[in-house]
Amino acid sequence: MTPPMDNTSFSSDITTVHPDIFQSHILNRLDGPTLASAASSTSHLRRLCTEHHLWRNISAATWPSLNDPLAAAIITTFPARHRSIFSDSFPSLHHSPPNLNPTPPPPPPPELISAVDLYYKGKPVFSRVIKTETHKGWFLCSPLWVDLLDRNEVVPTPLKFAQTNDENKLLNHLDENLTLSWIIIDPTRKRAANLSSRRPVAVRRHWLTAELQVLYAVPMETVQCVVKVTCCGKAGGAMHVREVSLTMEDTEGRHVMGKDSVVILQDAMENGKRKKLDEVEAKERFEKFSIVKREIRERKMRRDKAMDMVAMLVAFAVFALLFWFMAFAV
Image (cartoon, rainbow, N blue to C red; front, side, top):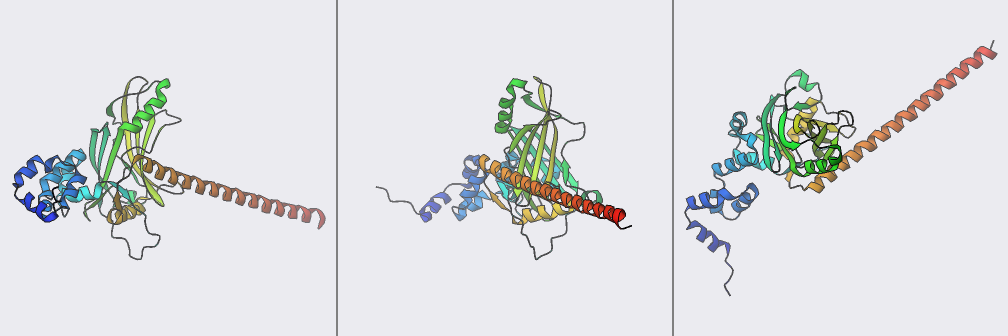
């Protein structure tokens, strides 16, 4: 029986292999998580696995939007360039903002960069990078709402808009095959985060317009980021994407203002955990947030109804008192 090989002998054997062979025939075939695991094996492998071109190729293959000149220029300013952006953006973001933060938030960046990729069956069908100016008054005093597409712009897809009897089949097909990544980048603090659940958390048809809405969400305790993809088309014809938007809402269903959303996003980028999230867990987190939101809304409605009842009783009592005074006090 051959004795097990310890780390020292394994490391010595690896160092005898030429680095070019490792990088051209082995390391460039690995995905990001596997490459990161290999880097933690030995110091020699760590030196090989941290080569910039490996992470640049992996990032570009995972998120084609990062090839955009604007995104590429910003990534070069990160401490480890593409390795930093991959570490920040993969996998899913998990964050619970503290209720009390003793330190004041950092100054907001003058702009945030969004790098967005839409995939069908794992293949990219649309990629775009946009810049959102966060120092303007309209952004600070308005709810966070980032539109990826122009008003009259549509994006073609290889899908067909379903006939009525194929409704459930189409919804399930979108749920299984239409994935999305929305990376938000802070160029000032050199941090990033992925605000999409990757797989949809809900697919539904709008009750009024009959358009299909595919939702991706990342809950963060008291708020959640929601990316909505709206698909349109005629029954039996080609399906087009006419809207891709990012919003942030709280547990009362209100949209978070731009100024507050930047503070939350900065904290999430700096302190949020990156954790692998399966489809079931993502939907459960979204449903849990939706239940909390619904319960808060129902409590508020009951409270408002009770206040209305009290106001009606007080008004009735005042009216009765005035009537009694006018009728019997004279």
